[in-house]
Length: 321
Image (cartoon, rainbow, N blue to C red; front, side, top):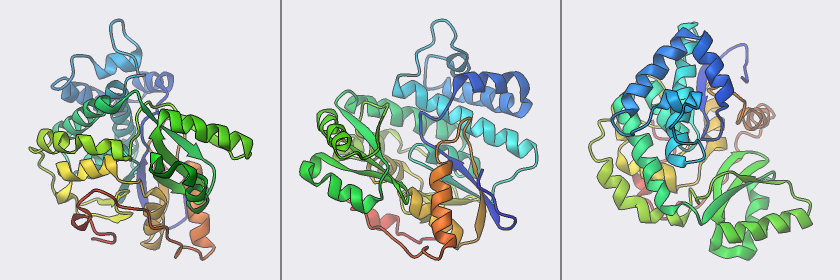
């Protein structure tokens, strides 16, 4: 948690890979509100999958492994929203929510923009669609500002692109697995800190474009609504009216660069001072702290414009309220 004595509270929902199942099992044995929400999630996902979310957390016999994107993302969602339920049971209420990549689905549910059924549908169908591009791509986290990362990846042209700007010195790139192998070698030679993210697909890349019509069709029945809790979008980097969280938005969430640092800065500029990460192990805490430190130092006006590429961007203007 990054906190200040004054100001509103933001619940932050990271992307997959943040959940530690042993810790989740501990919560199942000790936290009533967590258990209640996990059971609701288990029932909601049962409409879309033939395995149990609770069983996957406990590692039950016959349950699929968390190495599959279509398993880890539903489990990750369930754990995050159940942690949020536990905090709310203890009197910690969010004034706003902010999600990173698929963490935005959890944020939308906690804000009240999506029903649990619709959120489960988005998580499941989105992660199922990703399986079509799995196996050839990947992602790498580079401990450099985005400006330097753009220079670093220039030799690979369009084969590697920026996937997320997480903080002042934290950038994620995406691309083909072979090209990323070459990038990792280059980072080692140049003593640039870089870590391969354990996914086998290129989220936030041009590879996602083949999924656009599939996602628009399968998610056409969503019923998003305007939420009372502010939804700070990592697609636009600012607050967004949640009534437009339809299939097009969730395609953008998978295709567009994640503007997480911009979203944190927007939050600070609009009075949010306490950031509570909905994770059993800190994932984005350092990035949030670094962004807030720059804001406090008077550098909040710093902005990085990332390419929008192939999406109907006008529907989601930056700064929309």
